[in-house]
Image 1 (cartoon, rainbow, N blue to C red):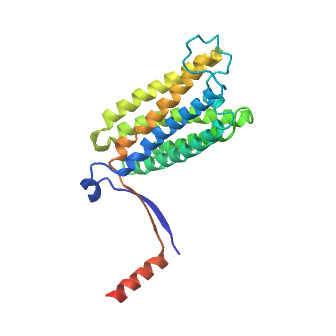
Image 2: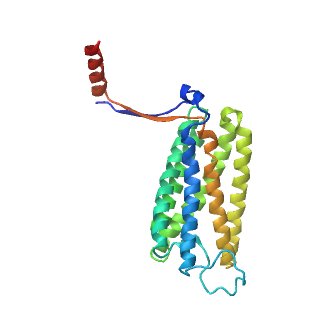
Length: 257
């Protein structure tokens, strides 16, 4: 028995010509918006339970006796930790899926496939980091949690810059320059934010560092959402066939005729 599974990217499919946009564009949008809303729910729960400070303080930072509003700290105790784990697992699955779909979309467009392959691998590693951060609380498994944070931060920015380059090279529907500039601006903002975050944490300005961390995460989710621009042109199909099934179908068709 022979089973063949393949991804088909049909940019010129007749059904796509009849529609303005492919429904696959909603995967990046749902990932971006859903993860952002979920994280803010975790933040609200942590603030209500008085686990962390608010991101905006009216009385000044020095008068806050609670912990800085880092995302990991906000999700350190139940029920916020349970929400965070569920959100993180779903987001990680979707990020990995988007990476695979993006690889399939550009596979036939790239003369040298190595950068596209590395982009898909980097997306998968970043997704793995998200699961580690989400499922191992910092107070329970600090080493595993911090390892996941490094994977998300490190490979997340690598994914951003790889996709910026791939956007210009592929130039899908002649929108590569416009979309590439947009992604480059977001990637620059993410890079600056990460550097600022590391500087603030090194200076032990944890409150401002936490605020910068939230900004970085929101920018990264915004970057993921931009894949909807190109996904609206493509139809992704998974086709599974085996010789036995094909022979049965052929027999039925022959008998019917």
